[in-house]
Length: 194
Image 1 (cartoon, rainbow, N blue to C red):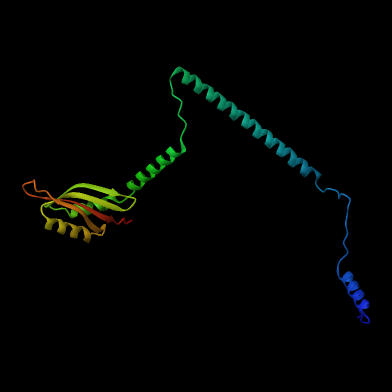
Image 2 (spheres, rainbow, N blue to C red; image 1 turned 90 degrees about the vertical axis):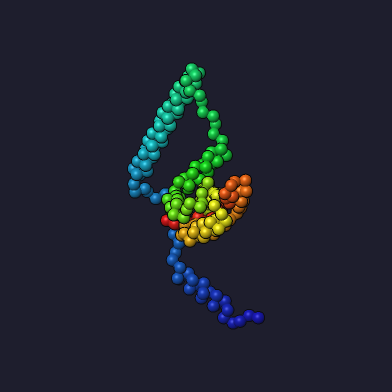
């Protein structure tokens, strides 16, 4: 079905579109440069930098070759032994060990020792203190005069702010000894306070 006046509307819309859009002007010829010397100056600076970098690389390469030649001469004379190649896994293990040692050195040891000294008494003899810095635990081994003295010692350790969750992991009455002391092992959480 054809509506009267339909082509006219389409032409009006097309004519209105042409009137609202600016005319597109294309210039296919090369426009003159305003600063031709700037490009030339940048080219010269870049070439100078490349030449400098190449010269530095050549000098460093010569120094490396000279150092390697000296190393070979010294190695042949027996004055030095060439270093063995470094294994990445061995290096990672050494770094891990160094970090563990550093972590142990930075722990507040004084607080732990003060607690152990303040809770000590004549009925308890500590034989070993084995801290585990990674897990923030400490293992204590020792001998107590009797089992009651051991329980009192555990209670005193629990009251400190540095050690908590003190557990008796093993104990043994030494029957071959005349006084029959109790040999024990304790594990406690070590609260690291700044």
